[in-house]
Every structure is written in C-alpha cells, then in structure tokens.
Amino acid sequence: MPAFVNTSFQEITMLSSITRFLRDEEGATAIEYGIIAGLMALVLTGIFSETGTLAVALNTVFTTIATTLNPS
Image 1 (cartoon, one colour):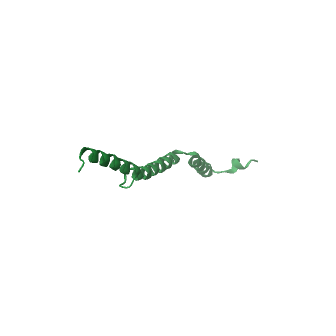
Image 2 (cartoon, one colour; image 1 turned 90 degrees about the vertical axis):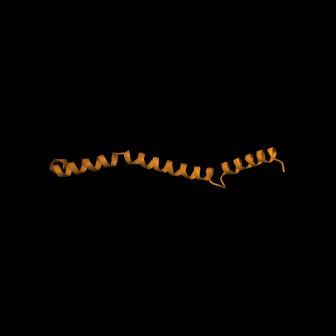
Image 3 (cartoon, helix red, strand yellow; image 1 turned 135 degrees about the vertical axis):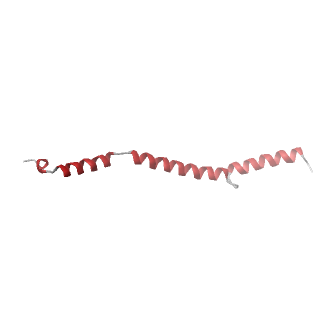
C-alpha cells in the first residue's frame, strides 16, 4: 500500500503549505528591489557628494567661468 494513502488530512495540508511557500517568489522580487535601491543610493551619494565626480567637475567649470568673466 502506498505511503500517501495513510497520511492524514493535516499532513497533506501541511505539505501543501510548505510546497507553496517554497515555490513562492514574491519575496525575492522585494529583496531584489531593495538591493537595487541600496546600490543606487551608494552610486548617487558618490556622484553628488561634495568630493564626488560631478561636484568636482561642476566646481571646476563654474570656477573657470567665473575667472574668465571677472579677471581680478
């Protein structure tokens, strides 16, 4: 006699719930979005910080413009 014939309804329900939980991928999507948001925050902080690439480049451009327009 196969083993599944003797299983109770509660055991079948529990196995079904566990199987559904293991196949569910909704949480993975939320985790992936969290990782992407964290990486974007790091990159944007590096770009827009006072010593970041964009800040240094803009400072250089505007200093050059100010020096050219107002030579002392």
